[in-house]
Image 1: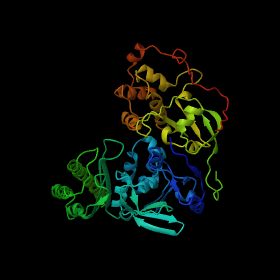
Image 2: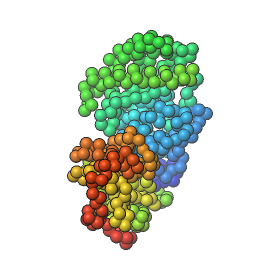
Image 3: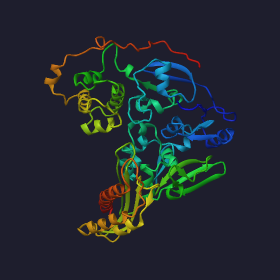
Length: 290
Length: 197
């Protein structure tokens, strides 16, 4: 059974902060509950009060933002998967949320909950890291913005203050000639390894690249050396194979974590395979926009 | 619904939900899961709690037509919503086409996963009446079956969607009505339940 708790159902952020304070800090925010209720049920966490964020309109929904996106923290994976605005602005994100966990978790689990829980095998964090997403937070002390790399500091650990709420995620518009792709391999509910690649292509040549890996390291990480291997490659011929091989070689030094999915070496190998396919997909999308 | 927030949060919540078409009013603790309320308060024991971790799908029920894990979904979050369980699939003793297809295709053996499979597939077919095989696999990949090897289940869902079922096979298998199958002994009837803990 889930340990006993009181429930607050605020309609505004200010009410949420008041409810948190009324519990003298012995509280947690909850949205879909797919992570928090699970750890409470397993006896890893207990709170006097859960503050349910689902009734706060400001935290929910998807808006186009000049070619980019603003996704409210309590928006579910399922809602993102079916959003025409996301399909238009960020197809790679649609593919990602379509494969998060299972259909039940996608019905209830939220983007904000996923990021705030900071499970090292998070799907969205890796792609959002590569996409320069901005996270908006609000707390009793005010509002602030941060990035995925500043936010996720360790397994299940973020820079969010206990009384702070993740409000929304802002994803910048794709640049001209930009392509983004994400791929993972999962044996269980969560990925064993995942890779996100973002590139710009101009005149048939890769001009910039960002590579992020997830699930094999303790936190999603940018891999600048892998990105550098892609820059300057001709998007259309055999030179790309060489660039990708160079990128794969740089992944060999990742500080991968051995877990139920396999050894550190095996997970680095998976990252290489995923990097190759993801780099090709991102470049193909970019060429289409070139 | 907004609650008063200056005081500590609520330790009892009155909820109203419509379960298989029947309005229910209950007072629950916030910590009670939908599976606990369905099974222990409303005596609807089709949904099984097995892994208790949202992985196996045996507790799959529908909330406003969407599949959720009853084991990790708070009953308070079903307040004001429609809840569907396997007990609601048959109408007047007549199995739903999906249930009949599970029988025709021998899509269960021990049956423990079957209510969850049926509810996940019901949700899938409501959204996609004519799914491809890949759609069915994608929709059910979070529901684990240890007996069948999944192929008969996929065939049953495709049959229910209309087609993909060899007609010769259908004739081999005598239809079983829900009355022969024992009806629904767990049907709690239509009386609204008022429960206080």
